[in-house]
Amino acid sequence: MNPLATAHPAAIIDGVALSAQLREDVTRRTLALKARGVTPGLAVLLVGDNPASQVYVRNKVKACADSGLHSVLERHDADMTEAALLARIDALNKDSSIHGILVQLPVPAHIDANKVIEAISPAKDVDGFHISSAGALMVGQPGFLPCTPYGCMKMLESIGYDLRGKHAVVIGRSNIVGKPMAMLLLQKNATVTICHSATKDLKALTLQADVIVAAVGKRNVLTADMVKPGAVVIDVGMNRNPEGKLCGDVDYEGVRQVASHITPVPGGVGPMTITMLLVNTLESAERSL
Image (cartoon, rainbow, N blue to C red; front, side, top):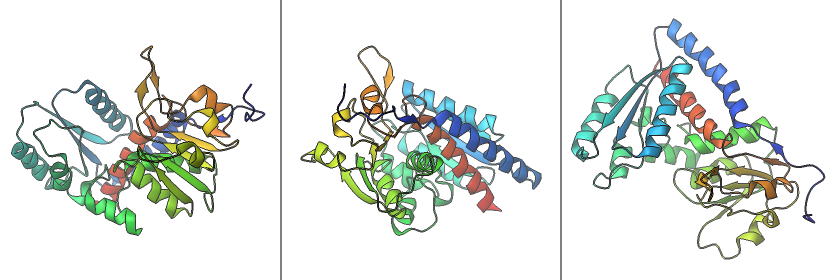
């Protein structure tokens, strides 16, 4: 028996159910736009045949269709030149039927991912990765929020969690999740600590946290003895255990006995990421009017 265990296992923040709810709103707003002659359009570019990327892209295109958005999926060979990819992005920037452009990462090694991200018009940067989107987030200006941290914030909102004055620990400092996550938590008046591979005593910091977001892509980076009773735990990781089963960064069964709320993997942050991509594309289409 874990001495830290709470009386009840953590409530599960169900990303599938929350996504379905948010997508109903997306569908409703999309119909309203269509009535005004605009169909929100997303272009997805896939270079090469990374199997994981193919699954992600398929899910994104399906989500668009389910919510009434128009999507264009372009598959390109792994030997596509950087210049050819940049030219495609340029053409899509100018295409008024496309409101969001997404290049599925990673791209093949001969293509500079930063150059690709910066080539996308900030007005169509629905992934929220462009330097101007990052800058807008940094200074609190309106812009596109990266989909995964955006989804995590929606999950906290769904349980009515007030972040003011709370201590949030983000494990991971990537440009895609860790850094923007910290900024969004800060905007809600949380006190934020960012931990990473060079952090000296991770456990000492996570034990102080009211909210923990684990986003390093390493299995069991957060175990039950590292969580204070009643904390909220958001698991962004996507890994496989020795049996090949999908799992996150958090030791789910252990941490669930200590936390007050937890997100599962699968069925937690993953569906929310795709839903926020739809929301961003829809908002881009609304702005275009």
